Image 1 (tube, one colour):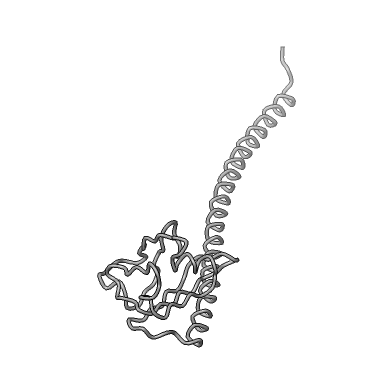
Image 2 (image 1 turned 30 degrees about the vertical axis):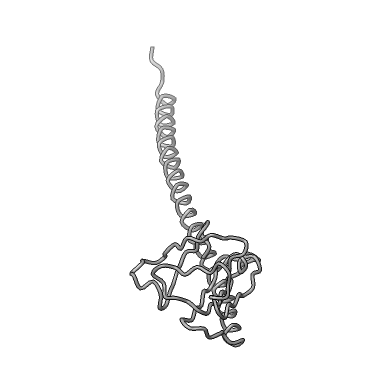
Length: 171
């Protein structure tokens, strides 16, 4: 997923053998001719059958060497929010069926990420509402206690006043 000037690796298979914990931030320089920039701007898959033929391809330290690369954008509401990066450690282009499958997976990932984001908003809103209800309940309880005290004072006043009215004045 895109995070500022980098990509945050959320899940991997067969890479990062040096024990990097996930999520792991991979610094990236989004230059205008770079594969990531082209993929993020076009919002379409980018297939590089032989990365040695791609200008400015950079191999990452601690990652297996990729000789064939397929980047598939994860697009949500018209904006690229991440990508699937599929590699082969040999020059062997991806088939049209494999690219279609990767596109389908990226679409499903976008839906899942949006659902997770919406779920988190609901959880946060629910927690805020619980706090607000607890606050208002405390305020109502305090106001009710004050009303009970005033009611008790009123009843005492009426009792004293009634007693005084029934008792004749002596002089």
